[in-house]
Length: 106
Image (cartoon, rainbow, N blue to C red; front, side, top):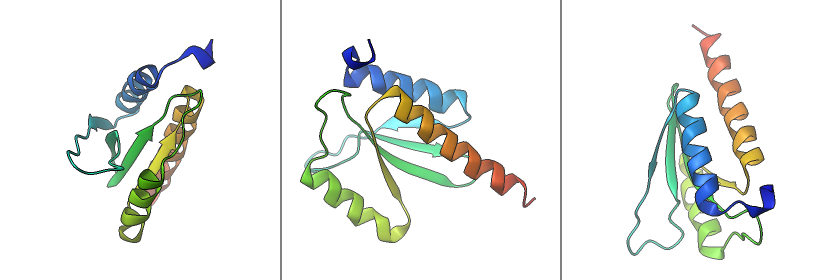
């Protein structure tokens, strides 16, 4: 069943989970910008991520998408490549742990 999911299914699930966990997500339209991420996701504690959602079966990271990730990395911007609902869940857990550790400092 999970392998029958489409990229659109993963995008919908991602948006739902981001919202459920206190974040916001918006699509990015990068006209003329090869490798542009599908989504930008923001969470409390100044955590902003560029997210590339791929179809679970046969989804591949293209060279221009990897180059885009390398472009943003020196600025501390993370570009995530997520291929399934399970990977979305793991991403949300990582973001939540980071946010909770920031809360401990206050």
